[in-house]
Length: 494
Image (cartoon, rainbow, N blue to C red; front, side, top):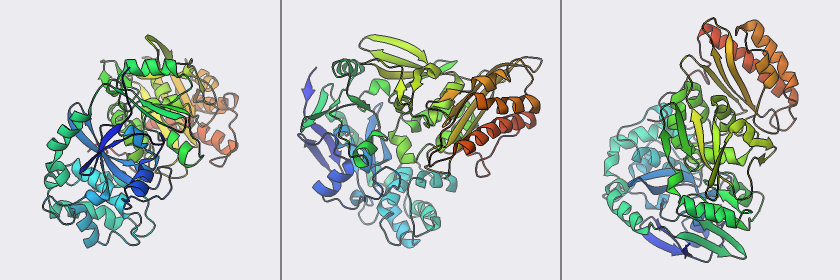
């Protein structure tokens, strides 16, 4: 493999080529400490508050796409071939305040101002991606990852509509210069492996899946990262410094969704935001759950493959994917094997992965006609909160109404995402009614012994899990669908 020891990217209107720096140096620290671009703020340093939001543009199938991401947990070493845009770069094509900034001023959307740059960047990402003013609901989704203690959000939400009145988004300087920026980024693309080393620690960023397979075999002890939305917190909160990191961000082969008719193949590098479009189309409740998967910044950076490979018992996607009957494709060198997802999780943070294995793709069957599906995410906050209990259920019935196949998958109830075998047995071969649902709810006691922690007590988790089965039956019987905050969001992709 040919190694390149420089990371090349664009920052605003300048091109950089960096080498010999900390492999886990965050974009936020580099912007503030090295470039003195202090408009990007540090609030939480864990991808939660949005004060550090910047735009990252990358080529996708030849098209340049800008997304809002959290700079506090994004490594500079993973920005090769990207265009980073900070608040200092925003302006009208003719000069002067950017329409989003001007609208924030006119509508008094800023008070103390600390969070304002991040809010402006989140709104600008939405502005660039929509020729017309989005719905209020869509704006609220985009702002869910930006916390503000001063304004109450009303003026901020209204500001984007006002920005469209000031000037059309297709006159934005980033939009106008899109072709030239795409040309510059294309010139930075190559098939070399990026290697960043300092102090005995190294990050590798391969460009192809074969290079990735070779590196994971050569360095089976390396930490594999995609969006680093979890590993980033190792650096900022736990002060960990992995000796070896292998980044997937340049492996375009893994950033693909294939529709095979009766199933989807989702590459390991497909972001949660992109996976949302195809998984959300399978069922409205899956759509709603993914909308509550972190913030838009986290969904833009994080991946479904990473959420599975991380193996957290409270990850949002594994119970849903288990309920759908998903499998995971693992690659080791030139060999591949496919494992049912429910068998992939062995123990807490332990998966069926051998040294050198990496998650290559997820295989997700589409529900059969007539399948009844249900997803509930229980958390203390509606937005940007880690799950206390997540239930994902799939039920199939024959022509007489008897249950022929049922999957009751839970997160937050055990050391791994897990099916409720005893509860399923109470339903299989029987009609799905209030009586059998009650039997299944009571059978959960034989399936799980949840832990007490600061998110929820064991008693709370057990009670909620049982109630989710009861609600599933009630909805199935009435044909209703549970509403979160009174609505089912259907336009979050607009």
